[in-house]
Amino acid sequence: MNTIAAVIFTDAPDGLQKESADLVSVGSAGLSVTERAMLSAYEAGIDRVHVTGQQLPDEASLARLRQRGLHVTATRRRGSPFLDAPTADVLLMMPADAVIEPATLVALIERSSLSASPAALLIDQRPEAPNRLVKLSKGRVTSFLADGDAASTDIAVISPEALFMVHDAWSARQAYRRLARFGILFAFDAAPSGLVRLTSTGNA
Image (cartoon, rainbow, N blue to C red; front, side, top):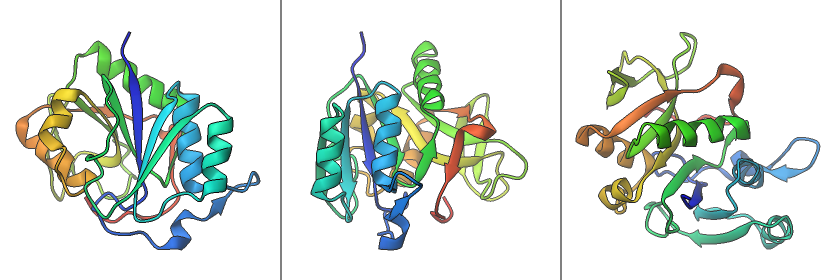
């Protein structure tokens, strides 16, 4: 059985620090954006979660998550979100500002496993999706340029092989571009109702 872990990055996918307002409490439950992202991973069956970035959850948030059964670690770091990634057969990478249905994460992990993809990026192919910069060919991401075929959600699953190739990448998007150049970044479309971005993360 494959082991699965997640990395939640609180900096923007391009490596820039987010404004603190981007990570404040959201919703009636009073959860921080980062806490909600971690709970989405947990509800998708992932109980090992590492948080990295210049803004980390406070100790009260981490304690609440651990009481729920999560094994949580955190590293305050500028850039390089992969350096302290947990060892696992499947690693989920997700920005802290992505509110996503756990079922969508489960589907992404399952489809990636069934297709034996070294790495898979969750994309949005709706015509109205903003920042359609992902260029596709035969189910793979080939580049991140203008006039693309889809938008990137910046959520991906990667194998240990792919992690080895990008462990020193400065940002998630730099890693995704590198995997695309290697020709091993597959694309899976997100259900339109399965993903909401709370804040803008800029262009890819």
